Length: 238
Length: 177
Ligand code: SF4
Ligand code: SF4
Ligand code: FES
Ligand code: FES
Image: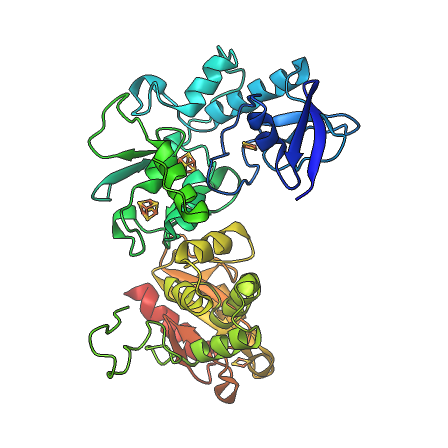
């Protein structure tokens, strides 16, 4: 495969054709904030946190779904980008009910971590306070819709890593919701294999193992990567 | 689905979704023929959902499951797509459902009069549910029963040759129960 040369934040980089800007950047040791991206499953560009500037293109592009191109000049950090990222994060917080202090993921949440690292100290938008329930019908796991940011990582993981296809997004707009099978309680799902991969994939406290209390939900995402590498590359390096 | 692994001589157990839907409802057969025309292609899902809604008036769980089995897609995917588009209606919230076929054959035999009568009786428009959640009124487009036009489906049962009077009588039974 042909290599493409581009610059990211002024740094000369060569990346494989077909690679995303996000991949190229991370190989070069440049970190771009992400939320819906998950190693091992394909990208959908849902969260807009990984926005970058590309010289010659007026609009911002998501790094995870933008492919590298010859001579591309990418910038991953600017006043404008920081502004947009903060705004996106604040909107995510305002959309549902994120009360970190009482969340199972407190301290291990990617949303919370990003908010800290991007210096988000308050939310300028009115909170929606929607009424979402918690599904605790599953024997082993629970789903708190209040904490869901609709990144669809669980959907992609359940479909493409586990292969069960139990989870999907139903509805649209602010009424969108993660469902199991035909929107029945998770515990009544016939396709769920109880593998727990969706729980591992979730960046927030929306999916959790039963019995975890505040701050206890630490997940092992390396396991997901391990499985994907084993399957795709036939390499079992733990 | 259970598969016999011990004795290869035995015929395999029948797959879950059979060619003929267990309910014997002809509309499932029509829907399946339509899917076959589309070669059971997974990306024909939206088209298939359209056809299903035409046939049934709305998309009930067993219809969604039937489609998911035939197209070999996860039920969650079928449900996700069906709820994304406003065009599709899932099971209406009324305790009873009345689906009037407004296909060509039924229309010329007076299905529009039937809809009108029921609309006036229930004081709702087609596609709506009475405020007490008793009855939902819907329309479909050719449910494959042209020979008995005009056909109306009351709570899943296809009834032949309806008139405004017969329809109103049935609705009355529900309303008074
Ligand atoms: S536990 Fe496994 S099979 Fe069940 S929903 Fe989660 S990822 Fe899918
Ligand atoms: S449950 Fe978790 S992984 Fe799934 S969409 Fe919501 S936040 Fe993302
Ligand atoms: S990580 Fe790129 S849009 Fe979410
Ligand atoms: S037009 Fe009504 S059944 Fe065909």
